[in-house]
Length: 90
Image (cartoon, rainbow, N blue to C red; front, top):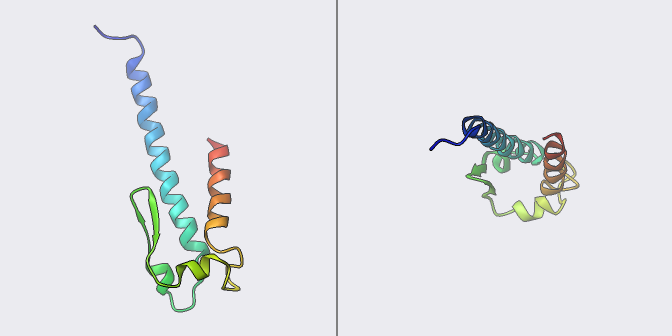
């Protein structure tokens, strides 16, 4: 037995999955963009791993607490603001 409209629903769900994956990419990119850059080490060691963003360097917490004048709000706060705005657009 085939349910009416299931192909449309499946298509919409696939579209939504693609949008969510793109949102995760965009959010990881935003995090990297707001990461302070002096030598490039912090940005080069910031990666998306699945649905997570990993800042794999020993001073990540210090930068995220606003230690750098380049990112006085750190990286997490501006990234969350960006994510909230993008979700509102959905």
